[in-house]
Image (cartoon, rainbow, N blue to C red):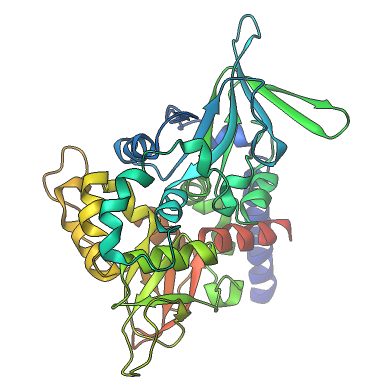
Length: 379
């Protein structure tokens, strides 16, 4: 009798979890956008890199779409994402690509092979005076623009973001046409930006509906990426930027330099099994004005991150104290829910996985989290 009662309770709980998960799967992109009232931050194609960087810093974002007059440009990846007047339908602008903070850093680092950190400051003004349109596509993300229809299911949205796409434009009242069978034209009177972090925040708010999934460990979920490229605490900022550009990475862990005399601090190294002491990320630059960047580039990446995070430039609005810089890390047995909470609370795009001695064993990125969550929801 007791066993039958327990089986009934277990079945009831399974049905409850199944129905809750189904409610989540029925959600659409427009449900994710309900609380997203942020105006789309964009720059014109003629904006200088200095202007673009100031726009990123002022709005505390790490990526902006680039807008141009219609009919003069081929969009990234052949995209035709247009903004049109809501009443007349007349096209006002064409979004030709996306530029991220990493694109700007890659451009700064794209110098002569013999340029060292001491030369960067004098060369920086010239490099930052070029038009933003000239650097679209320096990094992989800028090569294509993504849009998501408001009626796209959350599972299909997660599929896009599970492939490493970090952000997509969502039309507020748009329509799409296929031209010549394959060319896609998206037109709307306005757009909003949806990011991987927005999806994670939404899932965190609906944790009760996925608790049966997120209560599992990241190891059991297969969410850990074990291959981790790193820099050492002796790596200069300019060398970190150059190596990140080549590897198409937005962030790298900073590990303790070894005692090996010929260890190369200018190149990425295998960080697994090394003591992690910090993170160098393109996101760190969102609080870094151009004038400050010029004096900070010659620093080591570790000194740079500490300087940025103790600078008044990085203080939150209405907050006199800059936020405390902490290493966001977890253990291999941490639950997926804990890792999601860490990522969202600290607004980071990856959580480092360490052993009890603080040695690096892997990472869990937002892409990893969305991928395993989607697969579990499908099954």
